[in-house]
Length: 234
Image 1 (tube, one colour):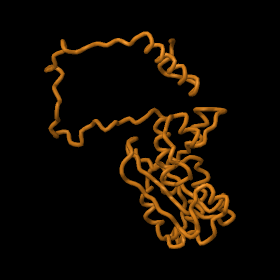
Image 2: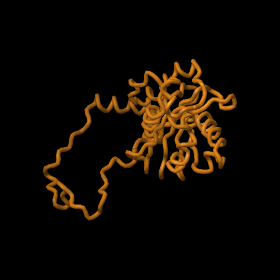
Image 3: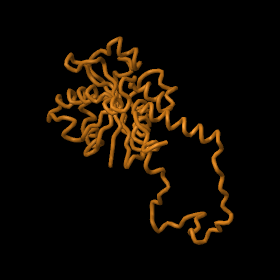
Image 4: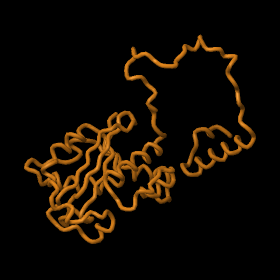
């Protein structure tokens, strides 16, 4: 599966009031592995950035003055997200702004004509009912380092959201241990039958380690509402 984690920054809160996108940040995940492919651009919105928005992201009118406009990058953006699942926190906000920008094109279109959308805000609310589910709160819950997030930034927030999403949905499936070529020679690998099993050392968990493990499982059950390891008894 190909997924695109996406975030935007804007001049204000309402596209219906003429507010525009000023930054788009996307990163690609394939089969739950973050790749090195990104799409990141700042945009000239042809209007002033509201003071309240400036306090959030710090992107000034002066900085944006010489940046491209949305229609200059729309084709590249749509190609990047094509046939992917978009992973977005509070998707109605970002998709609403993107649809507003896409409606201005010579050939108007909508995000969902090019990709599907997964809202991690809805997912977080299902997993943690009654709890705070902002991106900062989720970073804290899942121990994702957001210490560099003094201001919002589309690409930075997409990177944080990717880590949070993977943690919320069980972590990365592929840890990069698979070979890129089945015929590629491996280094330091021995067939199982060639191993001297008498050399293996079994180390059993201590009482303290077992207690810490149990406490961790109970914490998972408390925060997520269930813990598969505890299903059917402790």
